[in-house]
Image (cartoon, rainbow, N blue to C red):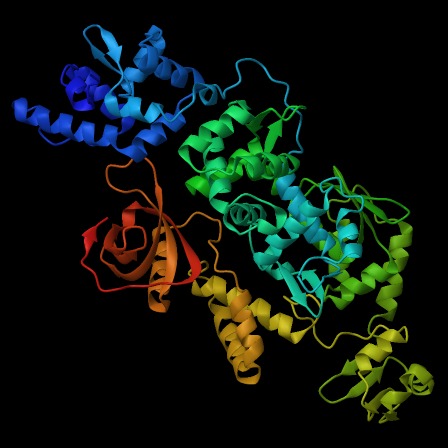
Length: 636
């Protein structure tokens, strides 16, 4: 008859009991050494935790294939494992000594019945030739979409790029080869609020991108990849994607046989094995998050995939700092006489985005290829980039002096920008010279402005046309009346949206030093609320309620919790419960911070609980209304 953990533990020595508690991180009752009653309390505590279904499933899922197979053979046929494996199983409390042999406790044997022996042989027995992947493939693919959208692309009513623009995303882009990859990454970025959509066009919202560290886009897009509903792309459910990445991370450094591994996972979770194997794994391979062999029968987590999974699942950003160093530097720039610009793609994406403002993207591969022209420089001026800033962006870390054709372009622009100036409020046009003013009055394409001279160089606009737009269309380069520092196209609505995004950063306690911005932001938002309630609601809806991706200090954590409590919003805690050896994700509705505890309604246990602040390792604000019913408090 199979024996329970408690019965088998009674025959173990104190040293063996101590090793099991250390390896499984089990709580040890105080003064357990004081006589038989103390030892009995220890054995009961150990048996409770060792037989807990979730803890047992977790420890079995963490074992390597040889250990699992040895445990299965011991349970089914009584085959004694080798000395090394026997010691491993004893230290984990999965097999315990009885009459000189190892015995599998009843609860472990029951759990092993769920596992088919073929599903346990998921670890590669020998060397497998895995195909090379693009380093930082997922991050670079996201950057390629952001770069292509700087100039704006058309979208259909459903929000996805039109066929022509989809071809633009894929054209000479070595990082994206398939339509569904391009549209999926486009959607992830759009849902993060990094693409600005209006009137059938989508642009990269540079202020939102540049306000975060370079790694942030990939971190949040990866989280969205595992959390969002992606049925349109045939992806398995979000819980399947999350579950798979969790177990890939736990087996980092291992090469796994795909089918046995998925069969093994299916015994732990109702996994959609077909869609996982046919859709999700190939996508992870194309994005460089996993490496596979030519036949697609084996896989391993890549360094980039490991870093992103580590950050998302363990909420540990400090542990992956070294991985992101290549995306923090600015690489050398090569300027060709034909005005072609070359620079490595693997570098700070912010620098590439600033280059995309002043130059047209031609190809994205190991090197990013841009081309500068008169039209691209004028477009940059329209975006609010000053002439001197244009020079700096193209000369920083350049391999030599600016080519002569580019110098001539800058000289021409310097001479022409500001030859006319439009005073929008007073509806005045000021020309640089009297002869130019006379030419403006005589130009037929400017007739609808009905320019009336006030002096030799100043004219009043008495017509109804847009003076700035008409002058530009006629080939003149008016001096901008103002440059909005966080605007992409000089549009006031977009400017206010960007200010609202800054307000979000400020309000959530993400940056305490934005005091000078706070007054301006609140005044702008109040003005917008008074003048256009619909646009104000759209701004409120579009601001993503996201964890900012950097390590959180106690003060920042408390401010986020207090904000959520005052606005009845849910948060997701990364919480380390007492006597646990790993963190858990808890969705809660904060009520108040009371001393060193958070009083909140826990949606897992469906009751109000107290969470110790020192055990909260991270907090993420959710864009969901919370719920705090009256209930009795419990310890968490």
